[in-house]
Length: 206
Image (cartoon, rainbow, N blue to C red):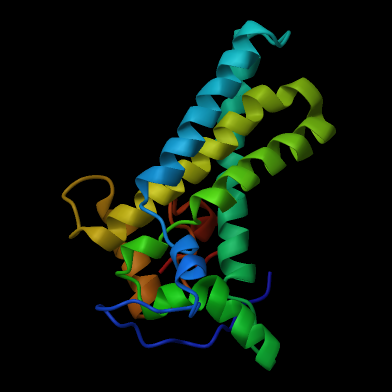
């Protein structure tokens, strides 16, 4: 896999970026972190309930599919962060796209309102994933997708705490340190937020 080369952005630890002049559109770009995490947690719990109650799946398979969803999400998280959020910015269009997708977060990393997608997008994403996975893997979706979604919820939680709080004295400390290196020292390292696994595999660990 090739190394990405997104344009470095000097972080500002105060303030926030106004993306839309229209206050309604601007408000729709922001959310409290608890909102999407709650949406995904409830959605995941509902799917698991359906898997146990209505889908013809044994318990061991539900557990295996759930853990597989968690693992696959961590891989997707790494790929999206590395190759979409930090795409080559060799054209003006790519520069604008990369900034709106992720660059604004690197410029204002302490802006808690933009550490997750807004609720409307979260709901649309959850429903879209349900339809897509159901088309591909059928009833296995009701056990796999909850793991995938909870992987995303875990990413949101970790991403929030590493930006909102000082480094903890527990297992989250290494995640806090890695993500701080990504923001303040080298944005071509430490693409994994919820886990350093794929940074270790692809040698992008700081």
